Length: 153
Image (tube, rainbow, N blue to C red; front, side, top):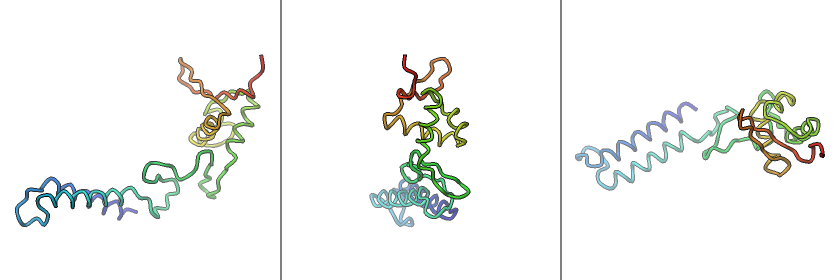
């Protein structure tokens, strides 16, 4: 909401002015140590207003602390709002077809998903121990290796 953002900025500005102008003459209501208390309170409330996503309706915002609304490995279809909790399983199936080595771009293209969702699915596989990551020194491309699908020597 735009009003929340504007009110948040106003509170932050008022709090900062209270802290900066703590030695003001009598017309300003907060002077001395009270200026710091009121200033920090207004800054905190302003940050809360600016960072909270309550009812913004954007669908893909971040909460305070930067954690995404969707979980790792779940894809969000913007048109229908459905989730695909089996994206990591689809990535495992693709790894078995690709002899155990995948990249983010290859996964995104073959599964027809955005890059960030392909990254989340592959990262989930790595976190669960099904894969490990190797970065090519010359290109900087990360490859996800799935040992159980790699050919035996």
